[in-house]
Length: 225
Image (cartoon, rainbow, N blue to C red):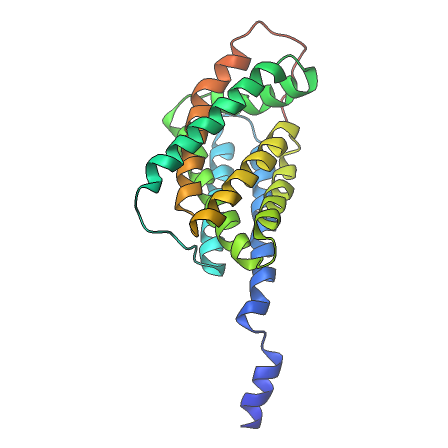
């Protein structure tokens, strides 16, 4: 009896372990994300690191907190429409951003990774990471933050994205992280944000590279890393 009582005192409770474990997964994911965007576009290293990022966030998110998924119903069409609408807003903003040198450079450097393939491999890695981000940020991080979960999950999303050192990607994380977090709060699960995220990512990959990379060259662009 004394041994069991001592173990209860020294062994952390599940709720006490969760934030620490969730944070550890996030740090590992941020390191892999930063390394992936420092790798040459379309290289084996890039694909390996991006898939490793997706695996880390997905498996880590599921291991720390299995994400709730709301019942499958009418939300699918609404969620896809949300992703399309978000893309429309981003496309409009991109028409302005490409006239601002610092944003044009940041977006162009990022889109080099997509332009090398408008290929199944690029789409696969983008969608795998989009799904992983929902499992981790709107699943594990959201659940581990009972107080102001939308703000906390979005803040964690932004901090992780800063590892890329790309201001355009950080800004996108702030906007979309807030949107996805609000979807998570309103639906009670990650299905809505997952569908919206994958829809948005697919459209961004298809339509954004021509907007920046097929134009006549402006100021000299430097590849990241």
